[in-house]
Amino acid sequence: MVFVTSTWTEPSPTATALLLLGHGSDPASERGVDCPGDLPAPSDPGLVARAEAAKAALGDRVFVLGHHYQRDEVIRFADVTGDSFKLAREAAARPDAEFIVFCGVHFMAESADILTGDHQRVVLPDLAAGCSMADMAVLGQVETAWDLFTDLGIADSVVPVTYMNSSADIKGFVGRNSGVVCTSSNAKRALTWAFERGEKVFFLPDQHLGRNTAVLEMGFDLDDCVLYDPHKPHGGLTPEQLRDAKMILWRGHCSVHGRFTLDSVREVRERVPGVNVLVHPECRHDVVRAADQVGSTEYIIKALEAAPAGSAWAVGTELNLVRRLALAHPDKQIMFLDRTVCYCSTMNRIDLPHLVWALEELVAGRVPNQITVDPDTAHHARAALDQMLALP
Ligand code: 13P
Ligand code: SF4
Image (cartoon, rainbow, N blue to C red; front, side, top):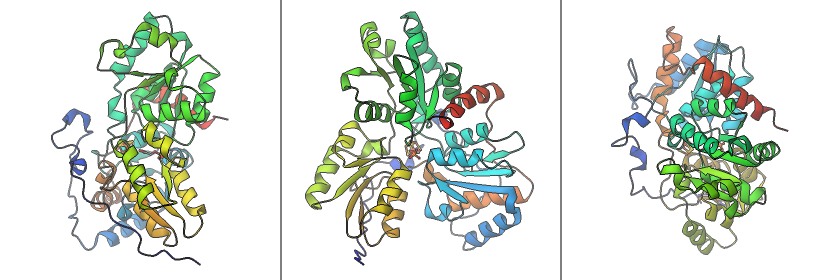
């Protein structure tokens, strides 16, 4: 067996205030920062025992879902871990759990609420765990865009597709307009489905996933894609551009994956000859083009599991996951694609104190931080989510 031990190098602290997202930013873009009740101190040495005791006391009444970007201290308490697609399916498949504790971000908990029964309660341990990409598409802006398509006479030929990383409002809009939700694991299948039903796709909110899938997996040209900027009149586009486009991409992006650049890829190829560059499709188009492989978090995990001992990998996705994979596979040289720290600051909001607090509240008979979607939005969003789950 080949052992390449101790190759993990912690990236340097970021110069920018990524870890402080929320401070000084628009407070309306956060989903609330209060944590009612007594939050245990992070230094409490009994936190692990308290989490274990609370989970044991709740037994089968609680099911804990953990997204791959969660901290190690939280992921160890997850009953199942997964990417956003797998977690949506797992939530839908647990009708007996009274409480679903979602260790992830707000849009994931909303989707879980939509996909679970009325008797089930979905809990997000910290309400400030939002997603900056999801916040980049607001329902009013999206309706303005759709009104423009209607005025131009193209709305009937446009199928809306939204990435899972969007609010329930946006999923509801997509469901109302006969569209579909997608994740990074099934974006190609969702686009194929959409193009069988219309001439154009209106892709929300991640321009990169939309462009990467259309161009690199579906054979479209970059010129077939236009970028709709909600902050500009008419999206910054002419009627001709909108009429000619195949993919109308919303101007949204992930602030974590957007940090990887072509220079990061060039630099690692120079430093580590033979390295395989593996990135998430939320990365920019030039980065994905320069990479050797692209895929969702679930894909990245499987690719590294299957990689031969001794092989070298530079991985472009969130740091908690990359570090966990590097430590889980000491026989492979797994490194972070960027030289600096790149956590998802909102995913990181769910820490052990918040998880302990949420579980203990449930034990005490109180339901903290419940995420609920209003019935009308949930009905239409569910249509778009069910369509995704039924994709061939
Ligand atoms: P997946 O879980 O679909 O890979 O998406 C990554 C992500 O950014 C989740 O917020
Ligand atoms: Fe949102 Fe990006 Fe964080 Fe995922 S990694 S929750 S897309 S900001």
